[in-house]
Image (cartoon, rainbow, N blue to C red; front, side, top):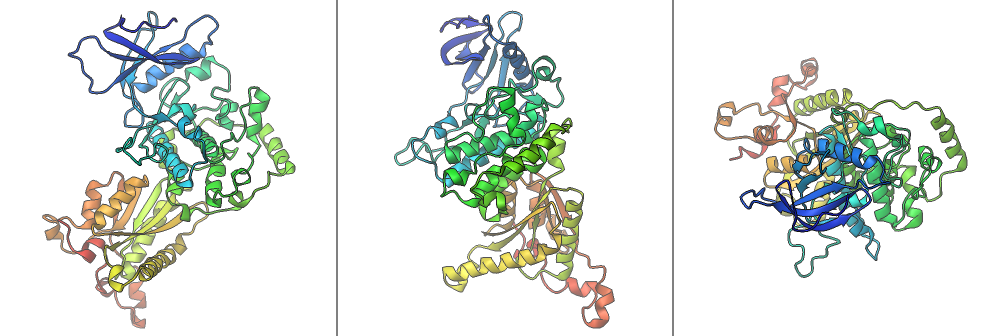
Length: 514
């Protein structure tokens, strides 16, 4: 299809300048021809190329994107406006979002700082998680399809565009898969559909719909940000693509020695040939990038030598006879591996409270292999400074971390990762809510207030406020200690006496919150 002329009209839209002309489509600025129609945001029109010699994937991809974009929502994708008749003039009008693609950071003349790489990775992972929760897998994530919104204050003196950016927006859903829609690409085109440098191993053999394929693509882009190189090159043949079913890339720290071992651990875990060995969800990836001190570093993160030939040979033999299964619903797959947060009182917790919370967490983890546990305690602001200096503050945080690790030690089940975090805030409930939102927590486990029930009708305690405002499931646990009475003759006391040892819950501990 030839380029549309600026100033012409099409189905009530006035065509503006062409802002992109690629191998798959042309993109134009557009506005409503009638000024009364104002969507409240800038718009762009995407028109697929349909010239002689263009592949069938252009028009099939256009159909896929039209269908998927209409059912997606949220700040991580452009808003859908309208679509043209495929038999007349096919086009797709959507929100136009200002920003720079990830390629802008890859083109930087100097190596990026680790902090910038991590923040870019977190932005991509959060956008992918939001997509997967809507049962959609992108399957064509690459630098030109990841747009970073401008951050507030960008353009002011002293604000570097490389260090300041907002949330990621995912573009171009022409190769995507929605679990509830027919997969036109799988039905009509060749097996391997995607961009060769970023395509996941399972996509090479025709498996579409696994959200961990997008995690692989994010891993490729993290590798690029770390090393300025592609981990597997850009193969153009089926044989070249199949190599990633068994091959490992050169360790990033071999290309750039100053990279921390924890970051190499994260990147190479994303790039595992078998999807089951990668992060179970994009939320888990973002969690590790946000909390580097909590990353469990294995030999994967410390090695600098290439993987031995014999290891690759064994993988090659296994891959040759491997039968790939269809993927479950992305949202269901994510739900089965949640990030579980348990909020523990920072002081005066009774044995009954600690026991009950541990039992509740054990039940949550036991039914969800691969789930992650985050143990969190909040200490009041200023508590550490009352003791004197920064060294005392460090010691206080360390003491609480040790207590959290001791509490969580019995929950150290195979297949689960556990991390401990000490927060400091004057508003305990808000600190817990901010942590849950920032780390994409799926389940919060915390104690339920056991007295002052009449007061709670008028003044919200911390558990009540968290339960009311949390964006996820909240489990409020009542304290019990079934073996307490058996220990009574030995001086432990009854369950009632254990509960009376002192304040046990955040709401009781710090007083009601207005």
